[in-house]
Length: 409
Image (cartoon, rainbow, N blue to C red):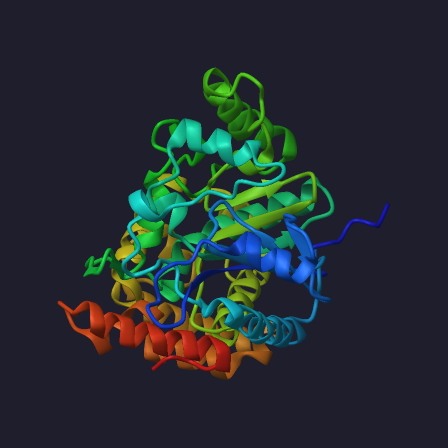
């Protein structure tokens, strides 16, 4: 058995993309064919070297992930970009390509959802039976997950406290889902809106999105997981879904692999932008664990209900959202309300002076904060009532940005 990783010794990154027709940009439910063409058989995942590829719930989404925990974010960013270029080349035989952003801008999930039908798919079938996975919150969402390791209860507590405080700040930075079914929604991170609502039948699964104040494995099991398992039991008599991943909070503890998985980041236009955000998030969480801003004892007092309000407002308003919450202002040494953009500017300046991961991504992180999140940039180019053709033209640019590894401006 390999030794347990300590805090910030390595990271696990997962990134999801849509497969679409190159000309029309309509979703193409061909992930099984794509995987079969590479692996020689239909399988749930296979390796492309340092990057693995796997299926997801629906047939038009494909996931890229590093094949085990890795430390070097710069190397990872290049590896992801290389495999995206490789995959786009492979997709040419279907006249298809990968499309970034967290939601397809005109997909109709009631008509176009096709679930992964192969192999060990009873998990997907159970989800569909209980929740009906045709909604946007199931079948039209692409995200980035960051897995952060911990070795024991003491490390878990510190990491969980830090992650809880960081979560409300992330949607303003990463929003990339402003358009749904061909219309501007008025919400910058619409994926998170659907995400917060799609399991309302069993509310304990997602809770308040921000995890509760629990800082040991025993308390986490008692206060979170056991409640979820109890509530889903009548709908899941065979206990197919009685696993840690059933928990859908914005960050979930994965005790089986000794990691906390952050799940709230929208996918960006290219890995360069994604890894600028990942490096910022990792650095912020590390600085909180290091008690650069506030003591661990004080961090543990953060109220999940207050943090959820900020999370929701920031997901809707983005960088322009102004923080008034006294606790969060206290964390970052502010005495009066501050906008998300000003706060992230302050955080970046502070972290850049330390030996944190952001030092390798300072320029793209600065650029992202200054330009605004991807949703803001998309809307700036499209206006309030864009035509389908205008949306298609803009999203074709985004597909090109993904392949070339460049910012969308």
